[in-house]
Length: 272
Image 1 (spheres, one colour):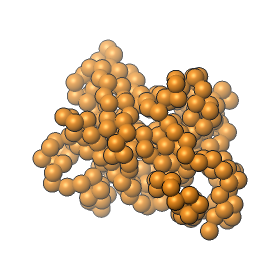
Image 2 (cartoon, rainbow, N blue to C red):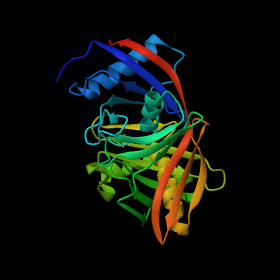
Image 3 (cartoon, rainbow, N blue to C red):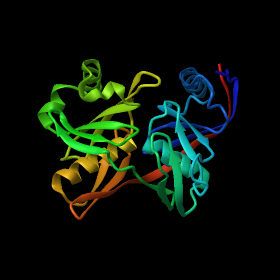
Image 4 (cartoon, rainbow, N blue to C red):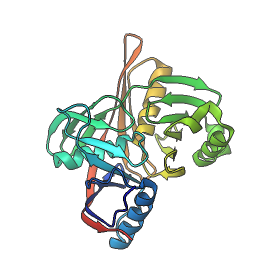
């Protein structure tokens, strides 16, 4: 693995309050766990006014579809809807357009639309969405979310505590996945809280916003209702992401997430 000293272009995107560092350098063969730590530390030192970086990804050329505008590759190889929206916002400069984008953790390009700097992403459909004792388990391929809506269950524990316990017990084989999350959702207020574990870096993150978790909320709700639903989900950051799950002919047809994406930093970063 190579050691990187300087990243010539890093962009910090802020989809739904989810501060994401997007690396444009060709550093895919770097020690990603080490690079993740050093980049987060470097950005905190470089600009103390930046919100804490929660995740890092690469923006690269497409692997399989030459018509895609680019590829979002998470450091852990998992899927992340918000990071994908961040890369779309950067590559399009926020101009009104539509097209396809590739993303790690997903084996096919995803469709997107940019309108008035709002980025809408068509999410991968779940391999399964089923009721389990803890809530609704939604497997999105690159990441699986457990959606918990029961008020009593949400008062007994936190997303982080529940996720840690499930991983330790190897429940639902979550420990074998590239990434797994626990999502708490309040049907009354629309507020959500997320914790996500990424196997590659073996770390649990309390997310200030989560696109895949928001999509999972919509998918779980639409599947339970067997109907098309649109939900405005309030993220822990206070920002909102809108998700729509379309139910057609007794089948989940599409899931989208949409919201504005701000750019907070664009420049070179020297790593410690």
